[in-house]
Amino acid sequence: MTKKALDERFYLVREDVLPEAMKKTLDAKELIERGKAESVWEAVRQVDLSRSAFYKYRDTVFPFHTVVKEQIITLFFHLEDRSGTLSELLGVVASCRCNILTIHQTIPLQGRANVTLSLNVTDMAVSLDEMLSRLKRLEFVEKVEVLGSGA
Image 1 (spheres, rainbow, N blue to C red):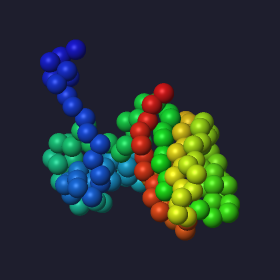
Image 2 (cartoon, rainbow, N blue to C red; image 1 turned 90 degrees about the vertical axis):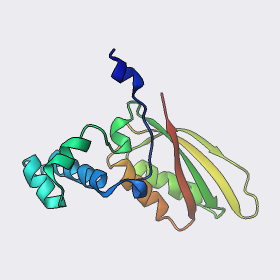
Image 3 (tube, one colour; image 1 turned 120 degrees about the vertical axis):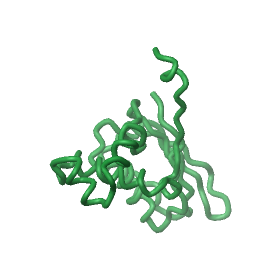
């Protein structure tokens, strides 16, 4: 292993703090991956990014779900305590074709409960971002966080 490879450090960074060029690089890579652009030139033109910026960032910025080698994620939810909320939450997870490995729910206090789910996402039918978006749209979900991933 080279010294450079040993010195590399990785960070998980929220999208809203990324520089615009990195966001556009991710958009361009997605266009290419999905076949909506046939070349780098076409992709960078569609997202209004210079080719030099694309090449600067293309090997250094990745969506979270593409770098997760393990196919298990853990999600934390803060929910309103209503009848049927856990069932509806699990229904959304199942509709995304995730396999639920563990469920931990706290006893509701003051009308709120915490739920932690460990999911096998190997066969997930949508992107992680799409699933999180669907879960956040549930009216009883106050908070959703990705706690981590691992085997």
